[in-house]
Image (cartoon, rainbow, N blue to C red; front, side, top):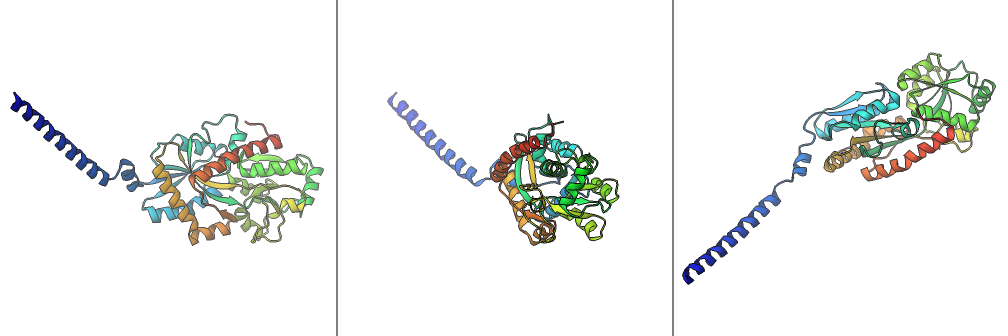
Length: 341
């Protein structure tokens, strides 16, 4: 019995030591293997990535997207395909991304309508903070220009304000829809200048600008880059700029604050988002690639020519920016007295 008991105990010790050795070996091997997250990141992207631009082709959002994604294609080795999904001031395309698979193969590239739509639509089909994973803020803009058709008899901001007071509600300004940068810039201008302007909504910036160039609409608040060819050709006239400073490319053009609307300042931004739930490792990878792209000479040149200021923030910094910008947009909406649709 004693020998049998010792044999059993001895066998038990041997088994215990064997288990410990196997366990240690397994842990050592496992430590050398990539985790599931690492493996997913290492293979990303393994197929084309959809980039949703929620405004029409040819507009500022798509043009910026093409410049940025060209760098992604070069550094990440997969196509980044821009899809224009315009409508409802960008909410249609934005909602598409909110409901997309959480695999990192659909991202949103849009402008500050992402923030302002919260204020101008009573019920959005998505939550602007909870349903998205911010990647980076790409730019801060210089502000839109107040641009008029040459048939409008005004050559300065003060003359335009006087004309609008003499014709209350008769001057129309083209916008890319409720809550778009053109709309908010114009509505805030009218409110602070004490005039009445009538907004006319289009599905995006290109058709809105085309109607101003054609003389069918008198006014538009538009980006410098979009307006510049028409300004140089004499087909449009710029009176002022919404941002806080004059532009090097248009040094004689005053800010609204300088030109007769004290305290006015309104700028926009561009950014990139994944739908919420995309693995943090992929968000980080995409952020790193975006920041690298923004720093390249080619992209910097485009941004300078478009009068955009480069940002390239972290996901956390962009999230904090949005948490402040959305309440700011709500405050502006209340100030200009526009009721959510």
